[in-house]
Image: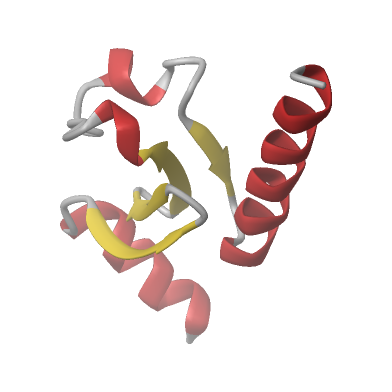
Length: 81
């Protein structure tokens, strides 16, 4: 049942903002979670070039995306010391 809902959402749904985390907007689109730095402003994920931007993070799981955001922020803070 969960897989069926995910497939239906993938086929029929536009990008959906599902929250924010540490300066990133979290967007659910095509069965994946995208982390978009809020400093980029509005990003149209329906365009492949935007999904492939180096600043845009992507994971299959919301919790994994938040973990990756923490790691990115940690690496940025360590490199600026």
